[in-house]
Amino acid sequence: MNPAITATKLVVRDADAAERFYSALGFKLVSRNVGGEAETRQKQSWLSASGDMSTHLIVVSEFTELPPPRPIAYPGEAWLAMFVADIEAACETVKQAGGSVVRAGKDQPEHQVRAAIVADPEGHIIELVGPIQAS
Image (cartoon, rainbow, N blue to C red; front, side, top):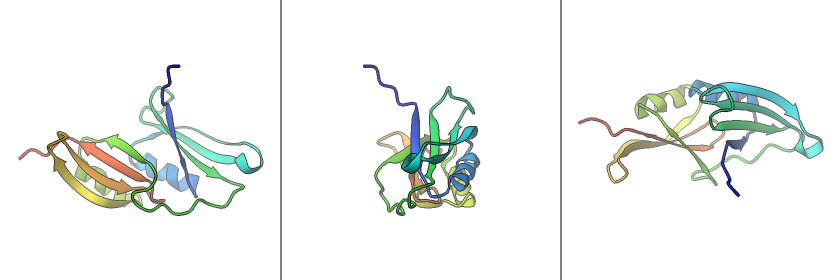
């Protein structure tokens, strides 16, 4: 077996709002669909950095026939991790797009990165990783 993780699915209460948030971060829409039956019926937006299926996908999925998921509390169950060129600018974009900054950017020399922890509007945790700030 040669597994490859090609997508991450986020179960959300509002697929349209989640699509707007991730688009503000620079992801491009690949496709939208509604499908499934009964409790598996989902409204989805598929997004990637490239705008096609050649890079990792974030799939935001709203289950239309089930109650909305409970709000997520830090630290949540799983985190997304994204490399960005400018941690502070990315944190500002997150706030402007309706998300929140959980932990502001901080140099982490032991990992040779600068990192911040943010959350999307539904509370999904995202670790932003970038270059250490020049002194």
